[in-house]
Length: 130
Ligand code: THU
Image (cartoon, rainbow, N blue to C red; front, side, top):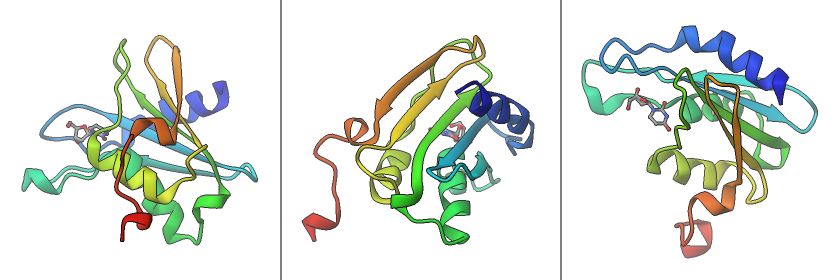
């Protein structure tokens, strides 16, 4: 957990946040130990911002990773409180990670909160609804 935190802290500098100035860093750990990192990437057309969680997941999927490969994701901000993933990221995590995968929130005090992916989006829309 401390290793993931260190990576998330190092990587938060890469957040591209000229508009919100709100930096988020996400670190995805695979079951084989591989790591994929993501940050939030904003745009002058505000609605096109991509959150850190989705950046990390899309980077991993772009390199062939699939949900069964993923162990957990850490979401880190440099705030002293916990920041929880937005609704869009919960939907994407629900699709791209297993129900039992861990989602860890981490803050600048080095505190952690851990939840199961499935608990972040109760009654979520999934492939079973199609
Ligand atoms: N943001 C994330 O990266 N992850 C979240 O789960 C919540 C919000 C980003 C999007 C935007 O760049 C900034 O935080 C402020 O909303």
